[in-house]
Amino acid sequence: MVNILWGVLIIIGITYGLLSGNIGAINDEVITSAAKGLDMILEILPILVLWMGLMKIAEDSGLLKKIAEWFYPLLSKLFPSLPKQSPALGYIASNIAVNMMGLGSAATPFGLKAMKAMQEINKKKDEASEAMITFLVLNTSGVTLIPTTVISLRMLNKSSNPTEIILPSILATLIASIGGLTLDYIIRKRRRKT
Amino acid sequence: MSKISIVIIPLIVLSIIIYGYSKKINIYDSFLEGAKEGLLATFNIFPPMIAMVFAINIFLKSDFIEFALGFLSPFLKFLNLPLEILPMALLRPISGTSTLVIMNELFVIHGPDSLIGRLASVIQGCTDTTFYVMSLYFGSIKVLKTKYALKVGLFADLCGIIASFIIVRLFF
Image 1: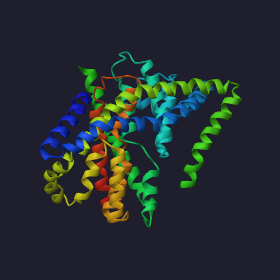
Image 2: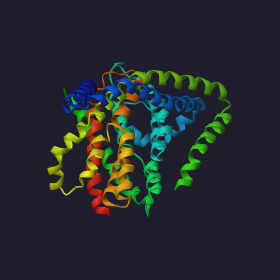
Image 3: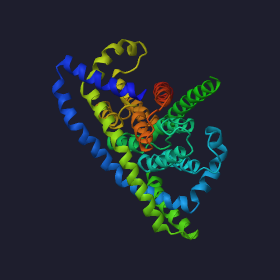
Image 4: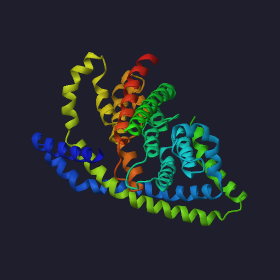
């Protein structure tokens, strides 16, 4: 599906640019977009190196296993295919916990470690496993308790109550997660049958 | 609220270090080993990141979104929803930075405490950028066949955005 979508974005962009006479802007984009991608990579590179280093300490010392044990009752229901001793559960728990605090960039390294741990027990290495997709749904629906960026921008724009959107945001994010997890569950069940 | 967020990260770092000492492991060696993995992970993310930024930026720059909005506007009017919010709702799964910019613009024009301002806040907060997370996470482990992941991720986004519309109406 990403294969299709990636191509479709480019085809629509260039075709519409040609039709609307906006092709100059597209031309600039073709030339400069790779540099923008590099900028993004350079932005996350130091964060990843630092936090993956710190997390290795947490893994080697057994702290991660402890965290995984606390959350195991809940996580085992969401990820039935992951064995209890898998370090993936610890990373998943840490990723979700940090994400909930609204610290997205600090959560990414945990997420990448979780993916790596799930890949180690994945049977088909080039294919996404069920656990990976469930984890991805949890991540993209962004279980955030404190949307820090939104609140700070509201403050900057002189909102009389910058934090009033916290509860509505939590509810909306919950519904997004529940919706995603439900579809994920239905697809998994259907795939088992066939 | 912000005070809590300020201490969280330092506290996480502190507890990792202290716990490592208490278990008598070589924390410095562990750190270096993990940091190297971080370097490798970034290396793996690089190609999918370039690919995604390329496609998304071409799409955004073509102004196709504005063209598509023309067709959707009668439908939105029928639902009594503000038109201004639509670009945000459509772009949310594709690009986090561009929706952040749009949100800020909406705050400046309509104020953060208006219906549009609140809607923008909740939409921004309710989901993460599906495309970005997908290319990042699957790219890092070189998984190319993502199966039904995108479908489920986008469905979650849709649920979140529809829920935002309803919840903001009910709350304020």
